[in-house]
Length: 302
Ligand SMILES: *[C@@H]1O[C@H](CO)[C@@H](O)[C@H](O)[C@H]1NC(C)=O
Ligand SMILES: *[C@@H]1O[C@H](CO)[C@@H](O)[C@H](O)[C@H]1NC(C)=O
Ligand SMILES: *[C@@H]1O[C@H](CO)[C@@H](O)[C@H](O)[C@H]1NC(C)=O
Ligand SMILES: *[C@@H]1O[C@H](CO)[C@@H](O)[C@H](O)[C@H]1NC(C)=O
Ligand SMILES: CC(=O)N[C@H]1CO[C@H](CO)[C@@H](O)[C@@H]1O
Image 1 (cartoon, rainbow, N blue to C red):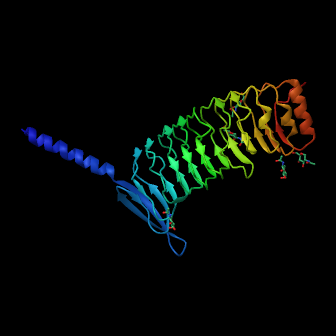
Image 2: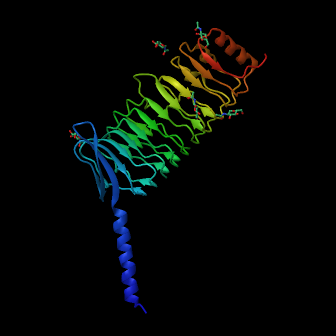
Image 3: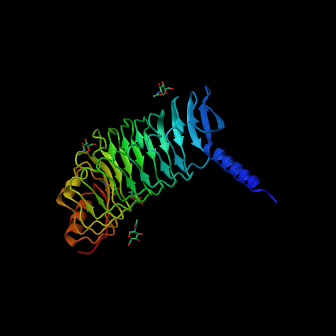
């Protein structure tokens, strides 16, 4: 019969092995060579580091929590990819000053919150957090990213966003938030978007009932998708004249504000599957006759 001591030491050994196995992260690093190909190496380390001329780092083992100190990406590295690795939590500070210059992609994980201070002082152009379980993007979650252009937050469960969730991202041009659970769009929530040119914003398939008249104050929009929400009205203020492509299908709109019909550059509108009033349908028909715009609406006999 095994002594208690033997059992105890066996358990201890198993525990230590588990800890050791867990603390090593397996990842692939691709490095560019002078002849425009890549050299790939597979590494197992406690701290993810990159090398000279690193092109990408792809994490290959499950990482439930990304902790401060786990990343030491010092030589410039274009891409950091950690997709489908059961990531639940990112300790704020983990990504601070990491030398990643193109993209951080954390798709298809189990993140529930983008906490304050998570993405700060980075040179990335693109941040992809789609296909997680994010419900909250906290205040100051994404700050001081001077090159950031594109963010994907689609296919999450976002219910809460703040007017300072993003701060100091002067080049943000494309925000994709479709398939979330937003019930409203609040005052100046998107004032972090670039002021240099018209932007692209997608909010299709949320539960949006209300849009504050000043939601988009200060920015101009080129493409706006509000398909599949619960809107019974949209404020006139959002039609600032710059819109080219507007998607409002599958809401409960009866009317469109007058400012909508002053959009001179509109080339596409989908407003099908809304209970539009006859007066609105007639105005849309007139717009269609002017033949400037591709229109989709339910053509009722009025
Ligand atoms: C990032 O990498 C580049 C090129 O390797 C280097 O010149 C620069 O000093 C690095 N920056 C930081 C903050 O480590
Ligand atoms: C608008 O968003 C929905 C998803 O919410 C998407 O299915 C649709 O293709 C988008 N429409 C356009 C014109 O991009
Ligand atoms: C409409 O398009 C023209 C040509 O691209 C552009 O110069 C103008 O600024 C646009 N109007 C608005 C209100 O954005
Ligand atoms: C919009 O509504 C129509 C009619 O109810 C439905 O067939 C269609 O699937 C809906 N489309 C979206 C994108 O929700
Ligand atoms: C003059 C003009 O813009 N004609 C367009 C009217 O719409 C049809 C269908 O979208 C186009 O094919 C024509 O070029």
